[in-house]
Structures are given as C-alpha cells and as structure tokens.
Amino acid sequence: MFTDSHCHINYPQYLADLPKLLADMQTAQVTRALCISTTMETYPSVLQLAEHQPHIWATVGVHPDNEGVREPTVEDLVAAAQNPRVVAIGETGLDYYQMDERKGGRSVADMDWQRNRFRTHIRAAQQAGLPMVIHTRCASEDTLAILREEGEGTAQGAGGVFHCFTESLEVAKAALDLGYYISFSGIITFKNAAALREVVSFVPLDRCLIETDSPYLAPAPHRGKENTPAFVPLVAKQVAECKGISVEAVADTTTHNFLQLFPKVGA
Image (cartoon, rainbow, N blue to C red; front, side):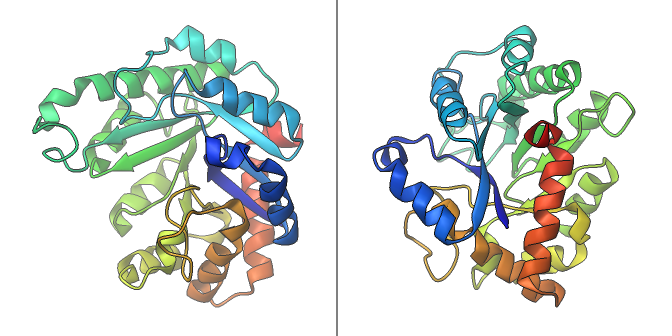
C-alpha cells in the first residue's frame, strides 16, 4: 500500500533489529522502501540489504555533504548501477546549509568539490539510464542551474526526484518543469511548516512521492524520536489533508509514481 521512497535503514541501529523493522513495516502496510546510499564506503551495506530483502531497493552515490570519503568516478557509478537491485543514482546534489557552523566558515565559492561531485552523478545517471535522488539544501539556485547545464529537462536527461522537499513554491515549479518528482517527508507534519504544506497542495498528486528519511525527521506525533519506514503513513495522512483526498488515494498514487520513476523496481 505505502512506499517509503527514501530511508537509511542500513544504519547499524536498524540492522541490529531488522526483523522488528520489517514487522513494523508490514503492520503499517508499508510494502516497499528505497534504501539510500550516502558514501561508497557504506554502499555495500545498502546493497546487501536490498539483495536479501525483496521489498527493499538500493541507490548508489555519495551525499553532497560527506567529506573525506572516496569520490566515485562516472565509471564507478555506472558499473554499480548494473546491479538489478540498484534503481537510482544518489543521493546527490548540493548542500550550502550553515556554511559557518557546519563547513568551517567557507564560502559558496569554496564548494566546487560539491558541484563537481554533483556533475559526476548526473553524468553517471544519464549514462546508466537511471533516475537521480536529489538532495538540495539552501542551494536550490545552483542545483537547478547545474541540472539544466548538464542537460536535465531534455531528451538526454535522467530525471529523478527532489527528496525531502523544503524549498519554495518557485523551486517546486522549476523542478516540475524539469520533469522531476517531489518527495515530501515528515517535515510537512510540523506545526511551523505551513508554507511547505502550501507546496504540498500545489504539487500535482501524480508528481508526488512520500518518504521518511529515517532515522531523521520523524513525523508528528513522533517528532524528535528515531524515525522508521513504518511512520510513512503519517506523511501520507498529511498529504491527504492538504489535498482534501483520502489517505488510500495518496498511498496508491504515490506508490504508482514510485514505480513509474524507478521502473527497475517492477522489472
């Protein structure tokens, strides 16, 4: 019924009690999940999970914020993408959040390493014929510009999804114009997220996905606790309220969208 389109359940705390996580998913009617790669060093744990659990799928890529990790080449990513359980490239993109606190006071001009990594992932996705999982935080202008420069929105584009969307309505429109899907997380349930709920109302249901981004961003009433794919129905409930439709309609359509965006899942 429900699909969690973005989670990190290869993290040790989940693997330590995987039967419970899977049982909780079943109870909550969460029938599939996409486990997201954030480094090449931990990618094997993502892949292993997907290869041993029929309802879990994998991506390959390096999160934009990770430093001091192995940089994949286009060839590395394309080779990994040949695995039948790998359905997307990413997560990839740009993250300019808290340049002082989290990035040592560097400027946006100092973030060429992120932009170069992003271009590598885009080119790999286009070569492999797989969609991308896009992470953009406080960097939407550059994210959109690089996507356009690399041919996204054209016949050669890989397409993909802007995950855990927190940007403006204008950015949502630009992403949709490029042919991308928009994925909403538990943030849309937070009391201070009224502007984001307006974006939820605007984005056509046939371009929406839902996610948990576990272990982060647990939806209300679990905010502040560790997230789990079993909580994704709460995200669906909020989408349904924003759009004035049933939770079942959100579950069915977002799952259909997931299968459309990631066709290897249904292959």
